[in-house]
Image 1 (cartoon, rainbow, N blue to C red):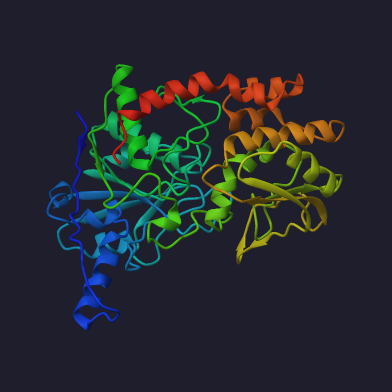
Image 2 (cartoon, rainbow, N blue to C red):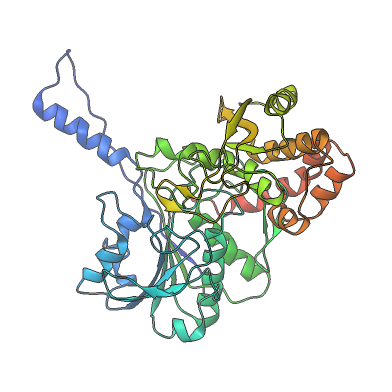
Length: 422
């Protein structure tokens, strides 16, 4: 079935006033303008006349987590559960669980508030089965992504979309912003099953990715999902999350702030080494370290690359097992004081996080070749290819490695254009 894409535009009427004082009615108008100019996410429009017919009197399966909130604080689970004209039947949770408090594989469970069954899509089951989808008439996805390929919510949506296509169940994606902006596209390009390839930073919203995955299925002769993307209003792809007017809700236990998300495409690669990525601290992915690192020396070496929009400073930290009140998977060097560096973004619009990750790996290998471990399976999995690791081990420069992926990135950018909604 062909995808149905619905775009609606909001007309904002300019408000004019004169003088130094704003009258009460004028102030009210200005407040209203501020409200309607914030980004309106797809979930806010699901029950609108334009889209409600797609779920009215239907059994609904909902893939979501704690980020599936409306701006008034209500969770989409509760809104749908209370609605008299829909039947919320099944809940599906991604990595970190429905409430975003798990940092390991997640088991099935039951939602204490509604009594509905929760099926984990980050345990033994990664893809909804035919038996599960036989219980629903429509499958909805509403989760806040962070804009990096190796953040697992993208894969959760992909596999759900595949299942919906195979079982001929309509699939609705409620679009949300790309927190780190929708323009930065970079990094080695990884094939994702039969659904094409994407680089580390893809510069797309979750809804745009769903459209691309569907298009790739069609190009490969596979059944398309009956897909509806409910888009955002007032969204500009150049916006960072703090430009949207929406509150930040950490999408996972270690994704504490927008600063964390900004650094994540670079420093998540440290997971593929024997160096701490800062997990177990209140600044995960913003700092890295190990007992055998000299932070001052490493910072000097990294600063010598003169990377745009980023500075490196020496730091010491002690990883803990509790972060922001949540017990996390035991981090590297738990309870040990480690020496390392912190990364300070000075200009996020010029900072190239996917490239910075390669420079960080190169600096560690240059200074600590005898101590550094590049863990093949994990690092290759994150990079999407063994080629980058092999080139690093062969002593190729980061500049050459980055130039080598440029052709694939340019090809992706051309393909990506046809699926952009904003």
